[in-house]
Length: 304
Figure 1 (cartoon, one colour):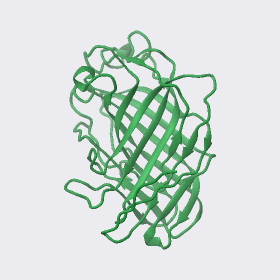
Figure 2 (cartoon, helix red, strand yellow):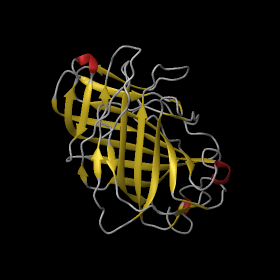
Figure 3 (cartoon, rainbow, N blue to C red):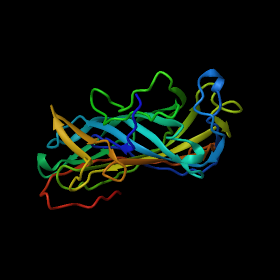
Figure 4 (cartoon, rainbow, N blue to C red):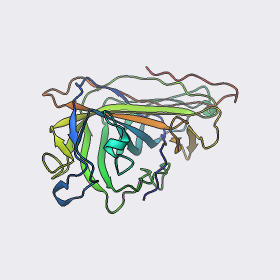
């Protein structure tokens, strides 16, 4: 499972999620050399402090509707966030992507409103409902210098990453309940698409991974503010595929192919946040607008 291409990836279907949170950033101490109670050791690198991580983002999103239909439909999105760097230290200090890897596999599902465009060819906009939402992520540590193997998520490989036998769970994160807000995104021509999501997540470290001897050395507990987005590229260049949409069997799909960073790929941020008594107000909105038009036209991406 190792063969990293620093890319980001695939976002399918209408309604990736966009969420706004109100959390206070926090500095945490991570210790790659921790043995985590025998679960595994990422590397011999020394402990360091950071307040956020920058990641690659790939996903496959499916909406249970063809572009020409309308109404309440279900959706699901699966994919990964692969840490590229931790803030505060260069890779040569933290060793991430050089001496070890950290990544998260996530699943998002729920229902929402599908608003078609002017014709099946022009796609539409998807707005998730404020209820019946499920968003979970499992964080993994991948020991050693060999890079994590990533691929564009497909129906045969929903996450785009298959953990190695040596990879071990660092913790799990679940969506902190809140309220949704509506959103909108314009897609560029040539079937390009735009997806994004952000969410405040309650984080639970895996057994033996917190405190002295654990990767999450201090402080614990904490939350995670997570955000990610992916766009298409027009026109695509060498090695670029961008984020595109398609339909099949009454389903709409949005896929962001694995491409080099800043080449139509996805990216994300993980912000460590203090755990507070009240989760605060979350605004979660998601959408993917699908469009097709003349090759010479390009619409600007907007989000509201």
